[in-house]
Image (cartoon, rainbow, N blue to C red; front, side, top):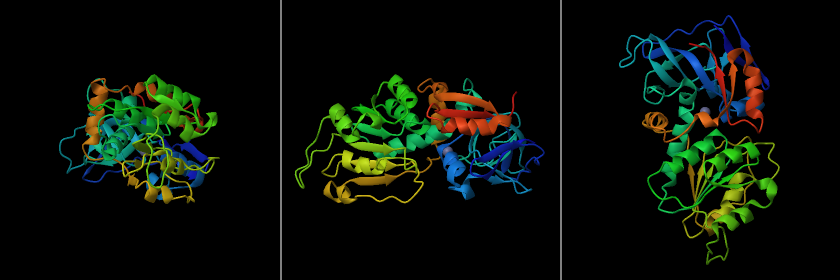
Length: 341
Ligand SMILES: [Zn+2]
């Protein structure tokens, strides 16, 4: 079979003649229709980061990334219950940039795609599920203001998750340096801030107003929650989004920061705001077992439009071009399409 093989930073190309994976008794074999490129794949692509957990290693030792995919079940292991050959499914695992990939049968890694949801949309299920968990962890109260730092696919998914909540949300502010991403955020109806336009905290203060802190006295913007989907990329020229978030949130034990975006290097941080303002910092990774199904149902019912977030699509043979595209500021989600119906 054909697969995208990662060798070294900036060296990921499609190769042919790789053995079709064998499946274990609790696994299914999926013929992959669509597989998205994730931010974590880019961290690996640039710096080898997280290499050990982002690839499936084939029998012949080829490292195949790709963990957000959809396709059709072609084989079912002896112990698998509730799934059958020919069914359309979302898979989360490693090795999705390939014509075939094995996936264990459990609610975190394998779910059926409802009718009416395309393979491309379905391949965005994992980032949507991540977003649902982040919003849940933020424990929003009515009318709280939320800043979303970094509005690639994850940040935009967080905005979609916020907007689909039943409760009243205050102001939602998206921060990014990409005009294309901010345009998408604006289309979703939220406020937009570009760090290239000036001081971020000042711009957010203008949108949200301020809530003074009595001791030690300060005047941060009225931001209840920052959801940091940007993390830290070595090429960032200014202070880390986490640092800005510490300056940006409310004091008096109200401000929360949900951290999701990964860090490409260690950070030097002024941590005093955590104490002065009694900030809660909450880590978030992945999703709860029910989130994949909820995300797919949101797509089926039209509560969220995921097609709008897919900006580029490439055949597997052009996976190198797909990765280059995903690194450009014009990209939101780039899809690789390993097989066609
Ligand atoms: Zn991912």
